[in-house]
Length: 496
Image 1 (tube, rainbow, N blue to C red):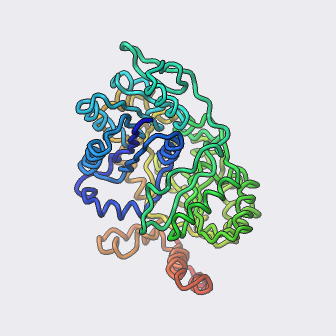
Image 2 (image 1 turned 90 degrees about the horizontal axis):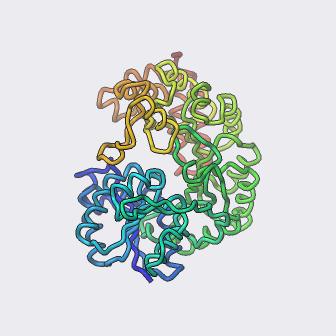
């Protein structure tokens, strides 16, 4: 059996000195969600008898990340180090791989994750000592480790890439895992201590959609696979037993609402077993039914998050979102009858974006906010990831080439149609029109609030009602509803 160290290294935006203090970083991590890729591999490898340790260093600054890594190498003395390589932590992963190969040449180095799965060819060519697991990692990684232990033929392991005599070898495609119930539950205890109050959960894998900005299709191949509701409930009950301080579970499925009937079945089981837990989830706006919304409330779902991305039908079509303004409005009419808190993510700079489409998106979001208020703190500017349609377009238009990913540049914004400066201006233009936070105390003190106040004047009753409802939730649901009702009766303060 092997000693295996699994690592996800620091993201490019996490730099010193903000992320240099370990105690501050740990306090921040305790209040954040956590990824489940490595915890699944950790549990699976342990179930086969291997000794496994995992380092979750996404939120660390580089110096602290390097320090934690080198400490683990000295103390644990692993036979194999497996890296989860995402586009935004690829540079730190390169540095750690190079350090390990130079100082510990006998340690085998493996990389997996979305970025490695897509860019495996260039990675193996640059790092001939590297082995890459392509796609889902549990079974391929386990078979790769066994082959390394037995010194058997690596080419017989499906779903990997490696170098042999200066030539890249890619083995046969590894089929996706059909029966997700066969996997042991992920190692949640990697992230839990007495301070962590919420856990994370996956009830399914994969998404049938092919959004132009998303690289997931390169891994899931447009296939959605689900765990049985019984298996999911068993994991929840085990988590509740292991972590009695846990108050909330965040469901991180790629598309939780894909099968409304299954969601209702899950809610019914939560209700039947009297599971006292708050749930948060994300999903697609389509499909979404009134029956499911009622069940979500009954099962104590308190917040749901949608990927809206844009409020312009032509942009949604180009992004292959499969939704329209009308479909979104229909969903919000359902949500307006519930107490569910709603979040809709937006992306600035999708293909077709102009100042006019930004304003149209803002106006559409205001319509939604009048039905069910959405609080915004920020919006994402479109970034380009390998394996996406927007990456193909960016390459065709000469913005960048595949070689870019071997350098130390940050994950770039999509600049084919708009400059960096224009995108930043668009982001401000959008948030000034929809984000109540832009006119709260801290922005007033900075003197950056007049444009937002003017743009949101008619929305103030809705925004303040939401804030009051949010604040008074601690006083109980009755008080929260009363305050919200009173404030919503305030006449509209003016027109845009």
